Image (cartoon, rainbow, N blue to C red):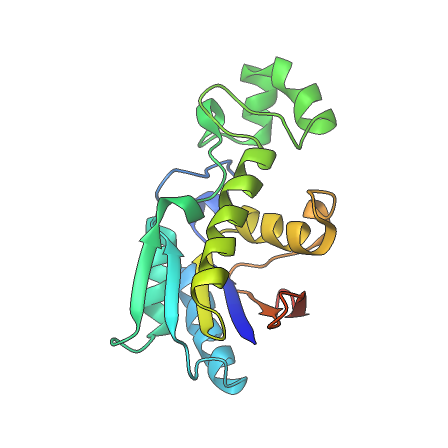
Length: 201
């Protein structure tokens, strides 16, 4: 049995301001620091901090800082990857929805009605994101069979993965709540059957 623990990074001021900020690189705010300290306690209570074989993480600062707060044993290998980054929002990075409505009104209909494939100038679509992260996780679970793997990532990344492994597409993307600092556990059996022990714990 392969176990994969997905953890969403802690809150940043960009989260607090409700900005679209996939590839921007802010650090955690005070609440984000508290959230990940609490995640560490929860991992210990559930004994999920035991027997971790390897760690993968987005290379963005909010994930790196979140990972540091978990205090995973120093001898466990930690690999940082651009392929685990959040969705690239292109030319709407750092903007609120209201600002997008005002500055890019031509985006709004497509954002609502073609949300799976919509992409901004310089950005990527949710379809692109899902393809990118599923390929990465498939590689990881193939290369680390019967291991316990921790993945520190972003809401969009984890939602895309849950939707893929449960629905085979993006249909489930908006059906899951993922709080900052939350833990989601995916299990992979020896015959490659996948199920989730829990989501957003």
